Length: 237
Ligand code: ADP
Ligand code: ADP
Image (cartoon, rainbow, N blue to C red; front, side, top):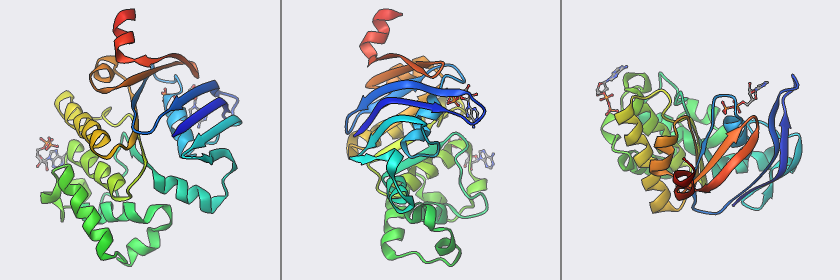
């Protein structure tokens, strides 16, 4: 589903975010990337939907050569590849339902959401996916009325409503307390298993990674220093 071949990324200021990274992720895998702050986890994840653009190498996502896409193809890629952020990235003053429906419109949808041009299908998918993360009772609340855990669940519903093949989560629990973090991780894992959505999650903490991942990728200084099943991490530590 996702293949990095000798991918490097040098930021304009000369920082090497990725150094000749090689990774192959199969459809349906639940992969957790761990590493210290600055290791390149976020750069790796953001390359997959091209929020950042690698400077060298080849990156294939669901058969597309991500570094060669035109703007229209890039929008299609970002519909297939949903993203969850540490800070939830909801429209704070908008309702939960509108935030999730906006997920259906992707990156081109801002003006549509201003004029409330949502179809019945948009509404159905938004509601169904809010139910999946048990937050449908907050439908008409403004996003900024919810707790952090609740906002992150809304952001998961927003991604699901766009019916993605791949779900990326960049430090999704870094702003949450431990019980809420586990709750969010359980939803991500459950969705991965039920829908077979390829899922890649960045985490700070190895113990949390060990609990949920099928496979762990360890990064340091823009390089992959470990890639294997959870059982192998236990043997090494
Ligand atoms: P992580 O997600 O593991 O904390 P990042 O991928 O954010 O790591 O960062 C990897 C390296 O790239 C770090 O040295 C970081 O400072 C640098 N970096 C990240 N974003 C930028 C940017 N926009 N411009 C310059 N350097 C950046
Ligand atoms: P959950 O664990 O279900 O995500 P919490 O236990 O964190 O939610 O929050 C309990 C209740 O307190 C929720 O109904 C939520 O609306 C409210 N709440 C928590 N934090 C905030 C906040 N920062 N602003 C507004 N309401 C909040």
